[in-house]
Amino acid sequence: MRVLVWIVEETWQATAAAAAAFLPFDADITLLYVRSDAETVARGARDALLGRSRRTSGEARDLLADAQAALGRQAVLDARSGRIEYEVVAAAATADLIVLARDEDHPRHGPRSLGPTARYVVDHAPSAVLLVWPDTPSR
Image (cartoon, rainbow, N blue to C red; front, side, top):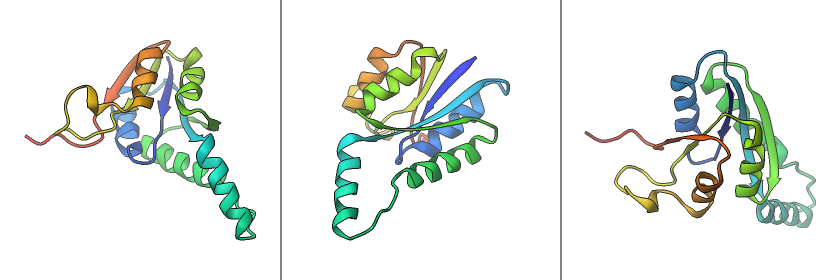
């Protein structure tokens, strides 16, 4: 089973935890983080103005490494930049399953719990989707 786990700053803990809990141990897992083109340009301009040549890919690597540690097993780490929804769907082309988190916590049930980017990924996913809540439900 080939699985793509989409890592986002705000929800990566829930996504990694769901992958660890639900995926078979022999699954071929890829952890994907996508930085938007606009964010890449803005950070590059800021760093250039401040005279720094900081690499933004280091932050992505750190986030992916943290997610892999939470996952508790080996995974391919994939950091990309571009139009986020297109990059996620393209990365999922060979996956049997995509794991992603909703954008809102439990009190916000319904369609608005998915932002436009996550909605695009769910609507255009070439495979099955495991959609998880980013928080623990209140009971």
